[in-house]
Length: 99
Image 1 (cartoon, rainbow, N blue to C red):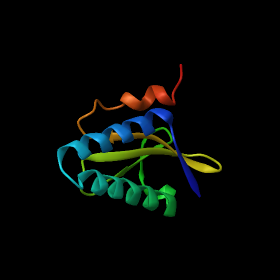
Image 2 (tube, rainbow, N blue to C red):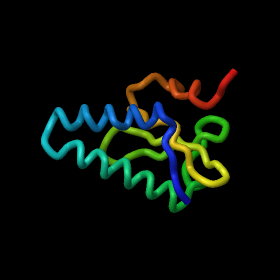
Image 3 (cartoon, rainbow, N blue to C red):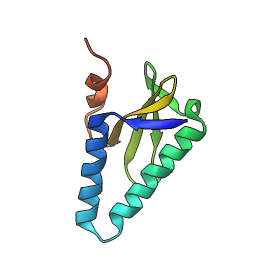
C-alpha cells in the first residue's frame, strides 16, 4: 500500500523538520526517521491503530511528541496530520470534515 500526505500535513511535517534542524545537528534526521518508521508501521497494518474520530486513526511516534493521523482510502493511506501533542485537539478536522 502507498501513502500520500494531505498538503497541510506535509507542510506541518516540513515545518517540524525545520524546527528540529535548527535546534541541534542531526535532530531533524532523527525526527524524519521516527516519522518514517511510524508510516512504515501504518502501511504494514493500517487497521492496527486506534480510531480517534470517525475513520481517522492515530499512530504515535516513539521518541518525539507527535502523532500521525491518517485515514485508509481504497488505494492508499492519506496522512491528514503530523500533529505535535501540544496542538489543539482536532485542529486538523477541517482538512477532511467539510460542512
